[in-house]
Length: 136
Image: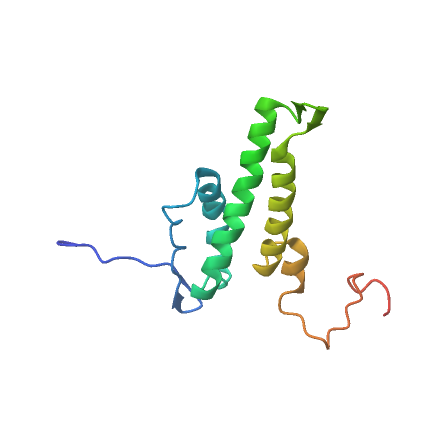
């Protein structure tokens, strides 16, 4: 075939599948890595729309902060010396808050295994959590 080759797209179910958008330039390195890990999954499931992008950005910042705090504590130790003696490193409290926020945002984005299992179920479903092994 001569000339410019046509641009190929992946097609699933008759509709072209778009690639996940790249991470925003302002995200810190760990947050960008998390974006690159989860954005394609969300895009493939049709969950990465314009409304979800801000939530994804916040999730990635929180997850990145958890990693940054862990690196800081790995380098400096989990305790610091103060006038009153040893104390928990300040990064520990920051990490706790970031973990809590990341968990809540992951739930909003259906990134947790529990949310993924619930996706698509209705109140009419009679599964009692035992996969049909026990009458419910």
